[in-house]
Length: 92
Image 1: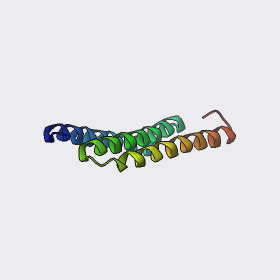
Image 2: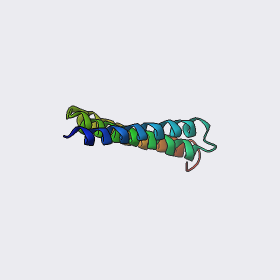
Image 3: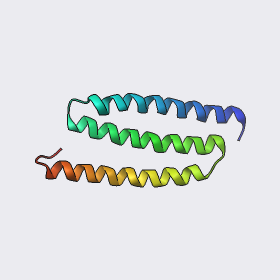
């Protein structure tokens, strides 16, 4: 990959990291449980995207393996939190 294109991917990864930090604020402060749950899911998705961008920019294919595993864990976590919230007394 050409270096200028790698810089574009690294810049995009940095932007996603900034967005994840903003979502972290929403996960802590969020006024409702739905806000917090959605923010945690967005942070997980941003992490997968950042890992994929870093894989392409740094030419390290094993980052994609880590991103895939993290995406599966993020999905399972989302299901577990939703199930816990519904069983606790209400639909989210």
